Image: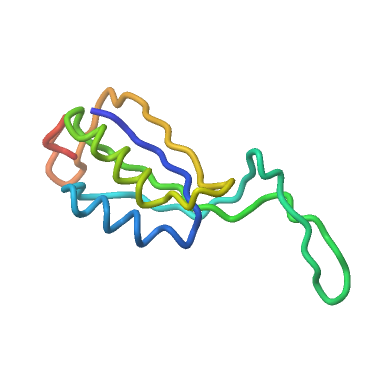
Length: 112
């Protein structure tokens, strides 16, 4: 089992969700986050004053999948979230030691 964490642009959320649904991913956790990478923020003009936006709005997706779905999930996220421009995001894959469904007590792959 793997936990896939993806950071994507906010306007790409619906595209990514649809792509994940189409390959059989049953659940995702979505969090609105802020951060920066190579973009290092940008300047904006507000009421005539210029100011620096250090942290850019992003969407963090967390998806728990079985090992057999990892490559398909990465491909679905990559193809649906890509704009070809800086700031498209990142995908992190980590191992899950244990998963437990609280309602039923199921563990392991059955809990996903």
